[in-house]
Image (cartoon, rainbow, N blue to C red):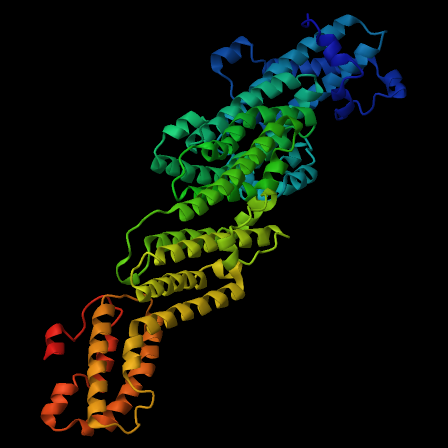
Length: 625
């Protein structure tokens, strides 16, 4: 006797499977006219044919248990198609008998027993096809095949004709032999699934599918290194360890979206295309846990308390990975039962965005609170300048991602009066302009901090050279990176002008006494005593300036050449004229040696050795001699 509830499950006219079932070749319609024409002999023939075929493939038949009969679909595809066709015929007969009060219950019970035998065989076949074709049904193979022939076109072209002459169908002609194995396995699975669902065995079919496919997906998740972490675990990890996990996650994200989840969704949609509810429940149960773990990792990392300098870039990498796949996530996990996956991906993006904003604020605070009191020898690059610009140039490479993350950021706090003196507010009309404004604000914080550090130098000339050097480095890094597009030409021109002013102030303070030692009109007539006094003042002031500035450095070659050229124009040219015109007024050779210590070419040589941070060809002894 059939198990309790089988009759109501299989034979209710309201069962959806009957409305979806395909009409068999023997019984083409169950209309009232055809029911009247259906003879008892036709019912008996159908049941007898089913009994003979099903007995041959009965999984509980003793010969089968002893001989371990191979798969029906593997041994003979023609006989497998006949088996499916017979099941469909039997199912229609059962439907007819259940609704025909004139028929006896004995035939119906016999048909029910035969259907159970057939379903056990199909369950076995379904399991074997899934198990034996793990390599051909792996997500990568399925997703690769689908890239050449979409699932929808495959289903429409193949049309699941069960005739022996159409085992592959139109799609089979266009795919390679390797892909054909995958397609045949998918097609066989779909035939069995359609048949079992139509006969009321959807639950058994789904359980088999879910059990095997979930193990494959879980194995793939494990091999990709995806694990569910807690904040307490990440807080205990060293940054280098966590950074490696982030790198692994980025690779896992790419593979999962390209093959793992994509392939499983394609296969699930294909096999269970006849039932939306089954394909949804199967796909959800198979992938939900792994997907939530995958998309939950960035949120846990974003919450980690450790905030090393490079963390923001790894967070932006993860944000970009999710953002780039946002549409695919919405499509693959479009079911209501997988809404938790979509929500987790969105939550991670939100948390990453918040963490990025917090880290930018921390970076600005780090600049403003820098308390290092050591002075850079010679007014060279300050470590804060080098670190900050390296950070900002990397940050500029993420400008598009920063723009995406900043859509819900609040406007920054108002600048202090001192900052407002240097800062021109930027409109926040769009996310792109908002990022430009924030970068500009960070640059402002750096410039203001450098200004305060320059005041620590006791020598005002070196203070201005420090500002010129560091601001020139800032501008140079802006030119070499995407910062130039975020800050704009106006910002660059404005700060280049500042560098020029700083350099001019340095020249004025460092060599002002040397310039003043020479007459405004170097070729004007002078008495011998006046000429000697001018040479004496020049000797003293130039030597003093040289030794005071010889330790100064200008790392940027372009700025170094500009400063040297400017000093040379103001000093060497004037001194050359003065020297040529008044040398003869000094007196004899002994007087010339006594009063003229620097020839014009010597002055040029000494100037050329400046700003390298080392003593040039001149030396105390050479000066004194």
